[in-house]
Image 1 (tube, rainbow, N blue to C red):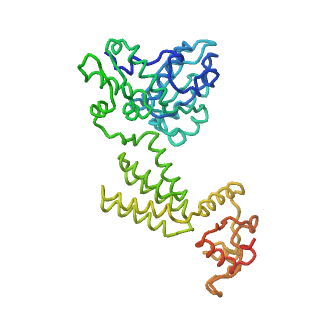
Image 2: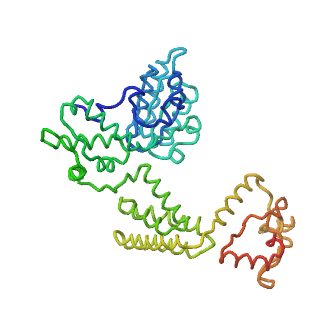
Image 3: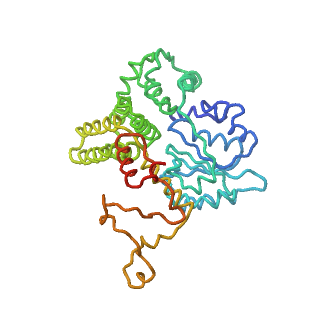
Length: 423
């Protein structure tokens, strides 16, 4: 007998629950499907929100050949074999065969490269499904050839509708007398995942021998006996929670930061991953406003590697609170980004002659190093001279921000350079 989640898998859009922003009346995917023509796209969303189901519904609606590949078990040869079969099944004026790739983020670069020609020429219509951010996991040429649609975790009303449908329409459950007295625990444990919700319902019902099954929160919790705070370290929540953590630090909220740290610790996140993000935050968000933040973050990382877990949670907490309560500056972050943009805009500008290295006699004869002034020979170890290429010699790149540490640097620059840093 198939699992409940498979028995209840919708066959049409009218039976499909959730994602109204994509498949509801007048929504973009609904319009394309009703028109009988779709372009290649990638569905990004957490597990159990209907990515695979939606792909199958589209194939049924369009009445086109439907091929599936598992990114876990398929290689480049498998991709090419499917594309060859799709070519032979393509009929004039008919919709392209659909190639559905689940967990497309697990495809290697070479596997993704092997899809490019078929997608670009319309040999297949690619539907990819991923729980990971495609910006990080899907190569840019493939991403540019596909639309991206974001699927959301199912809302409470969607999940309750699904539960009612299960107990009233499923061939097995409708033969049982099932009363949903309390649903909070099931909804909490499911985390917006329809498949997980139906698995929980099936487990609870199968484990009850009473004629009438009365589902309560206590009953569900007892049957599952699992940690409700655990989350998928390889899924979307992994990125959402680390994002909330970093934004809380950036926003100078130590309570928010320590809460999201606790969520990651309790959920089993890799401590080294958290520590790495603290180092990045120290450089990007605290920066020159408190250079000690980088030292603290690095010390936290080193300490964590030395003492391990669970004591490692303490230096993580210490560094988190220190960073959250530190003054903030992204002037170094902005400066390097602006400098990179300037380099891309202006190209390989020549190095001024006085700044060039002159290791040979010929180079000296050509003027390399002429008129360079050695800063340490002058008062305050400084002398005014040009350090940027001629074409951008007056360009300001680093823009100090209003905090005590950077203002100290700014005053020193004003003393040395005068009007250049007073503008």
